[in-house]
Image 1 (cartoon, rainbow, N blue to C red):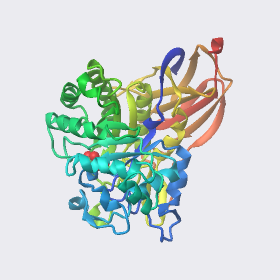
Image 2 (image 1 turned 90 degrees about the vertical axis):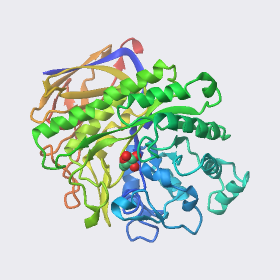
Image 3 (image 1 turned 90 degrees about the horizontal axis):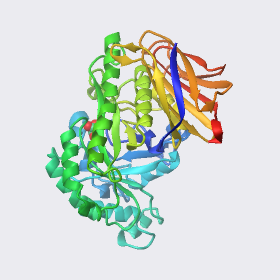
Image 4 (image 1 turned 135 degrees about the horizontal axis):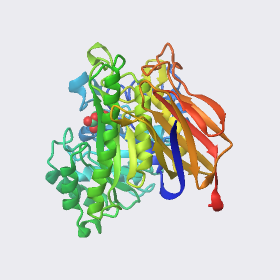
Length: 495
Ligand code: AHR
């Protein structure tokens, strides 16, 4: 029997809701055919956005949505996406899938979507093919008070007298790669230039620096050395976050994989823990904890084989999403929770029809993936206080078989557990230290017939959570499954 100890007396941090963020780029089928169907569409919509997705998103309380890229951000001219005349442009991804950018969805439409689902917008500023003045003017257009500037008046003419609230602005995207192929020395100087201008915009928001590709710690060192001098930050109080991206790159077949492939996926996915710790240790080693909380603004499993083929009408990087993706998402979110002191935000890539998606759609069809259910099952962690957990469980193929995190909020404890085992169900005892054990546990279980189970347009609920109550403190966690346990909590000494 495995044991999970909940160590109530040990005070840990608050889990920022933004750890449960999302990402929607103008790529493949994310925006067009994904969230956007158009106001004239026969597909049920609100303000042109797919109603199915709006309703499902509201349920999982999305804290933040990143836009317009990704790589696309580095060729985006925000002026193309406002007003009545929208030019068709070559998208960053046109070479890959032949699709042009209609600009039907621009700033106003995207803000509408955020308002409809209740998410805060996170904009990425183009630093590769546009100037700092372009970024500054975009801020002016979006955030200047009603009637105050020429751009505020233009915004009003385009339908929004009141300014938009945009709390997060990213300075570039993947500038080590698609975003300009820059060296860290070059980017960090560029960042200083952009940040000095954008920081000066007279509204409150956070600036997020473009950071490393995965485990490129040299980039983080260079960033901290170049940007971190106190005299720079004295003038840049809005610099709050430092981003890095990590994808679990997989080459096996998305559905027909082996036991070895399964464990390889989780060993690869779990590497994100080391990246969080090492990037953070460099940042804190430079005394930049306040300016450099980590923003993992792209993460997920990326299958490099067996995606839909754009040449055959599929969406670029669209992939089916099975229980493997759900268990991986659950493990990753547990890692984020347990590292909450270091992380300001994280955004799974991407929302619809792309990489590790929560939704798959085609025309009038739209379904949720098992990963969507994980976000639903984990939502109680948002804004909760982390509880320290100690997990005594077995190991398989070099990995602990259970991944766990726990939190408390409003008198309730939430424990989320992923069973990473391909073959073995686990009996688990939950042990409360410093709190009275609950008499009954409410359990939500996400489990397929097998680890390849997934939803399709024909069987949209093949994988869907079940809920039940357990007396006592022991539960069974089937192999390749995700469980949320919730219970009332009474902490000893009334604390
Ligand atoms: O998410 C797809 C692409 O992956 C993004 O545009 C880019 O930032 C990353 O390489």
